[in-house]
Image (cartoon, rainbow, N blue to C red; front, top):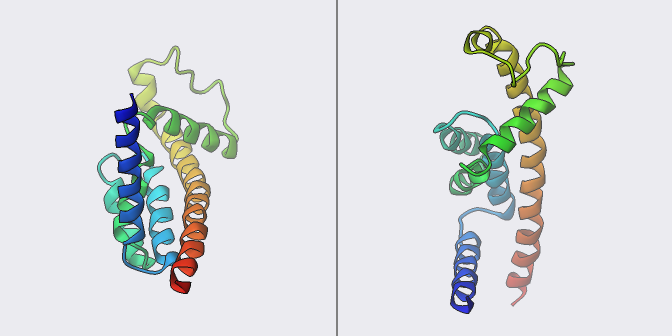
Length: 154
């Protein structure tokens, strides 16, 4: 058990060292990471990383950290994340809860209500992505800024 714990600590240290040595200012690194988190909130399987890297290039953020930020969605978080995004989108678009009932929906009904589901999922993904991207970017920016000032003084 102790060996597993020490191995985990070693991996965390390597990741922090890798993060610390990324190119760009603290703001560019945090921006790239935040844009990656934003992109990871969308249900575009396989294109989230491309979207994150593209947006990082557009906003002049760190592309590699944008790719890492998209890991917010993974096989363990797909269902809870996209269900939460759908619920947020439904709340914002004033959803009628009687229109879609997942317990008794047939395939034909599901296809006929595709726009209803998609619009709520994408609206929720945009809102959740913006909030989590901003929070994630700031959560990385402040420690990077603080520690880069400490390192410069030595």
